Amino acid sequence: MRVLVVEDEPALALNLQRTLEAAGFAVDVAYDGEEGWFLGDTESYDAVVLDLGLPKVDGVTVLQRWRAGGRTMPVLILTARGRWSEKMAGFNAGADDYLTKPFEMDEVVYRLKALIRRAAGHAQPEILCGLVRLDTHSGRVTVSGQPVVLTAQELRILSYLMHHRGRVVSRTDLVEHVYDRNAEVDSNVLDVLVGRIRKKLGADIIHTLRGQGWRVDAEN
Ligand code: CA
Image (cartoon, rainbow, N blue to C red; front, side, top):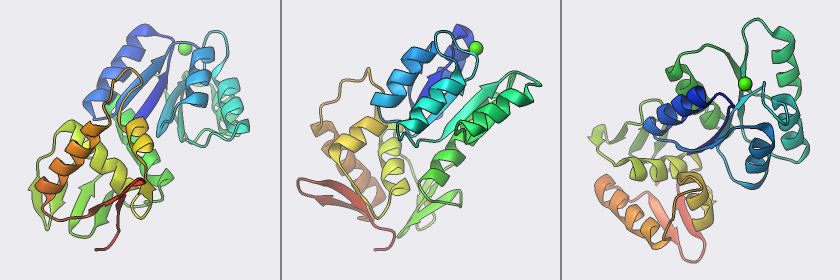
């Protein structure tokens, strides 16, 4: 899963980036509203953390522009304490959730995971595909109840495919949602990684569709 953080306070931006990367997300950071809007408009994100008080273009305007342009990714807004009118403006502009500063870093992780899961149509924190179960909170994967140890990259790929089970995920989709924009990705790497995931799972839930991409079925 790939997220965008738009936050102008350098220390908070860095803290968010590190926390989210440690939680397994690919993370891009923008430090003002203009760059944030541009990235959200042109790149593919599974969710966004958006501060409302931003230089150049304020957060509410950024969000309004994304929504007007048809960008539907879940957006978690960050607001200052006690600014109810600010939160309301954020929700009216299309925010999905909010956190008031200061907040616990772990709370951002939990809320983002829940937003991403719900946006993909899953109400439960566990996603089941055949014998494979993914706990979206902990990132734990089990096959028939037995834990499977995956690397961070493997988990990101499997998690994206399982969130979008029943749909064909193209190579481009997968690259865009698994790596940040600074990553240099050789697309053959994906085949190697998918191969490794298959081997570790033992259950063949990932189908390769030649020339199209991959699909995980809900049942198999
Ligand atoms: Ca700010």
